[in-house]
Length: 120
Image (cartoon, rainbow, N blue to C red; front, side, top):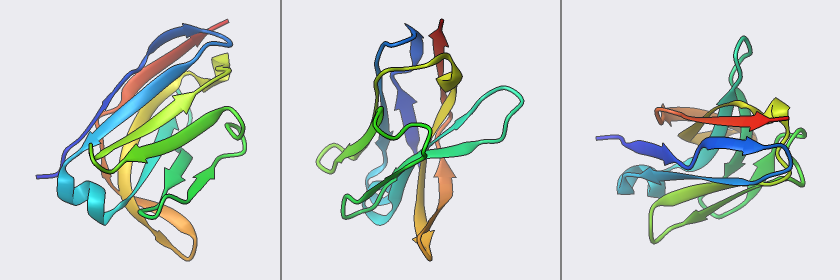
């Protein structure tokens, strides 16, 4: 059974930090690259960051230098450390498990999402 369970969302003031966690079932975590997406109201879901099985990372331009994706293979968990948060970072954040095709990340499985709200 595929399970991706996010946690760590909440309300934070602009300039603050949050760390999201996503616990994955073992086979999903070991066999897939992991990613974080977000979807703000009225907007399309967008890729925020992804990390390969080998640990290589990619980031959306809007979060480079502020967000860090990492993972703990022993805990089957991927993290998204979010610093210097801005009101425009407000969204539901989704964990994903997927793969790369010609350098582009494609999700195959989704978590249920966690709300991040940044107040000005």
